[in-house]
Image (cartoon, rainbow, N blue to C red; front, side):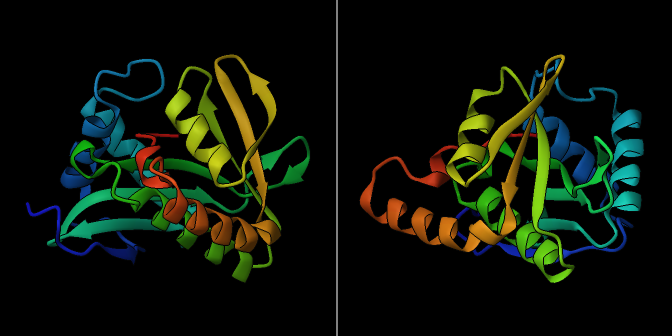
Length: 187
């Protein structure tokens, strides 16, 4: 696969024909991470079905040459401490395509989708030892808000994302450590 080819991001309502490729992508992205990811292929397939079922349109896949190289799934109607706050459940990019700005592009799709639906914030859970992921999320405006076991909850205000996007763009131009270099394989 030619990593220099353009990436196309598609919003999906069905995973028909993509289960095997997305399962492989998920397993590759998490590598040997047995702490934060499912490892059994059958469980991963069930998890993908669960993600799509609860996404209510919030499921995007990044393709290169019609091959999935990343995906993001969210759940708009998540409840946390008696409040409905959309949550990003999964953000993965295959290792070959990490550092190519795909995670950022997927996050921007999620932010736009949620803003259009009237939401004002979004949250996610990240493994406490997943330093790359935490750094990426902080860089795009997420802040730690809670902790449960080995998981840290992070949230961002969607109204601030437009400002954050401009800041990230300027930072990428001015720095050798760009956003694309701080990618997480998973949430």
